[in-house]
Length: 346
Image 1 (cartoon, helix red, strand yellow):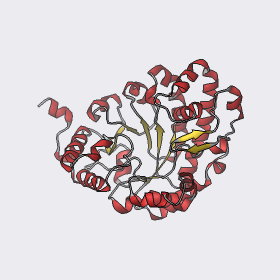
Image 2: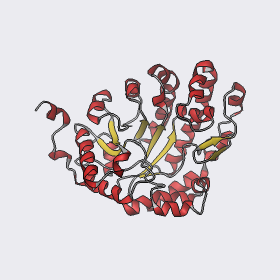
Image 3: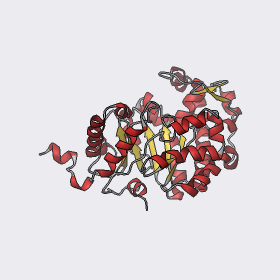
Image 4: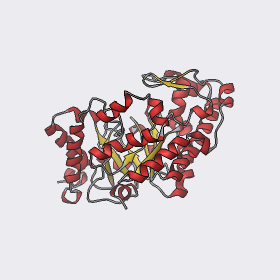
């Protein structure tokens, strides 16, 4: 078994495995060369291109896992949703009425994104490390559907949950069924782990999360349990939600950079922690990068830890900085260091 899969399954490994969110993407010159020739949707929907982009960082860096190149919006068009990117997702018509929600169809697995399954098969044939599939959590997908485009605070969606809760639940129910089918397609094609991105969960208080997110995330993770693969979850800016997140039936929780892992670990008993270097540190000089990475590694002691950023890598990142980060993580022997708790009592 790979180091990544061992840690994801709860093993306190001697070295923290490392992969990077958005490691397949725009900070790499080889990705930009492809992007100059193809639109973003073309790259997502062409298996050979999606596989190539997924594999690009593995040729440069000694990473412990690959992350599928796709977008969380990929499964939505078969529902009848028209999406464009400029550069973020923009809907031709936001979904805000009960009639619009009723009109959304939930396609069968094979209809959703057959190009994703083919890309996964191509990647598995070449990747030396496990492949992580992924999807958007229902609450986050609904955020885009209702708001219609990117927003600073998604005010339209937040009020929608209050003034139309029944419609919101009907929408989330359909998105949950869609997500289960989409992620099952990925696992059947060969993905060895799945991550559920709940990018905008942190906008909400615990009561709203408990009603509009937790039951649907739970349904997804429970539906995937039979595959026996690690299930990963990330909610950004969500420290106030960990009292709810701790109950999700997933093995790994990814933590953003705003709070030390040693503070989070008691809040998430039994979970592997993933994260949580501030992506901006990759823009800093090498000495700062090393010091900050080692700090995160020390904070991750005391239980299973997968090293990652606290969110996606920034487009202006110099790939050489990522190579340096990978080297620092790979040389850090977790058995030779004292846990943060022991240090605090020294």
